[in-house]
Length: 151
Image (cartoon, rainbow, N blue to C red; front, side, top):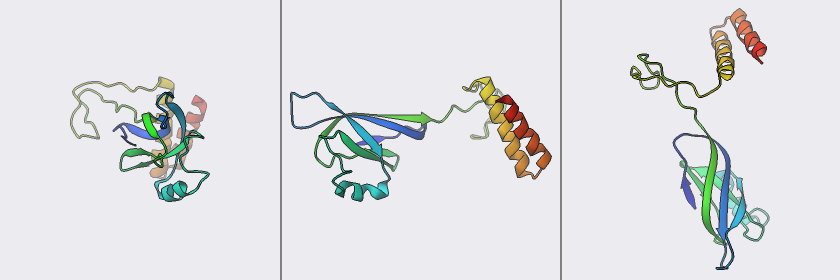
C-alpha cells in the first residue's frame, strides 16, 4: 500500500495500520509498523524474523519518492493506514514586509504559532549562530548566555 506524504511533512512519528486476512468474519487487526530504510527492503522481505507477518501483527514501511510504502508480502490486506508526523510550522508574515521565501511584500500578519518563551529561545540561539558565523566570539557568548538564562 502506498500513501502520499503531505506537503507540510517534516519528520516521521508513526503509521497506524489495520489489516485483514482471508477470514471474512474477523475484524481488521491493528499492526505494528516499523520504519525501515528502502535500501534494506529486499533483505527484510527475505528474513523470516523481520518480514511482514499477519499472525505476529508486524510489518514495516519505507519512505521514498514522497510516499509511505507499507509492505504486506502478499500475506494480508491493508484496510486502513494513518500517518502521524511532525509538520513544518506556519511561516510568519509581517504586514508590508518582504517575505524572504517568496520575495513579495506580505499583505497580512501571520503570528508565530509558538509560545513567546519558545520564540525568545529561538531568537537567542539564532543570534549565537549568526555571531559565530561572523566570527564574533563576544557576541556568540552573549547570545548563548542569554539562551541559558531563559531556561
